[in-house]
Picture 1: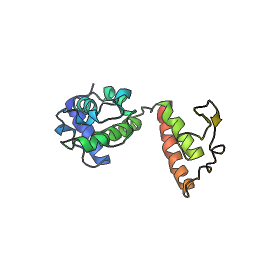
Picture 2 (picture 1 turned 45 degrees about the vertical axis):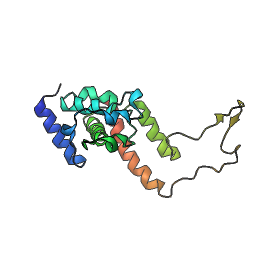
Picture 3 (picture 1 turned 135 degrees about the horizontal axis):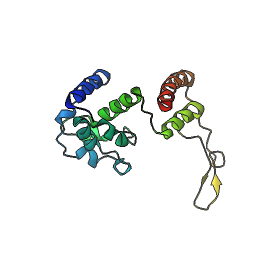
Picture 4 (picture 1 turned 180 degrees about the horizontal axis):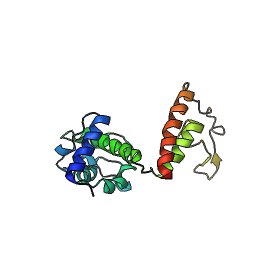
Length: 168
């Protein structure tokens, strides 16, 4: 458990990395959570803010990773507490401190490097129980972004940091 002084120090650390974070203005109205598409997966933005304010950083970890960063919570917050930005900052802080993200994130990064998508193209079953692919549907192959080499280089740097955190 973190003390309040440690929470204040962490908040200062986070402020340096991401704009102005103001979780202290949250009064738990839960408007952010009522619009969150990932609540059922465990991401409850107003709870994450409150746990952070109480210094329970470890307890926030479960709810951080399901967040899809759609920014609905930030848009819905009447106090501008910026829950999505806090979630992103807490993810970064956890990885920097040696906590590994879920294995699915590593797989997703590998797919982005290989295929330029989070999931490789695959055959799917249609309503007639036939397997179809982009080619059988007459769709063009997915194109690769033009600056994919630079993107891959940067992604490899990030991924190597994540893999190092995973090994700890």
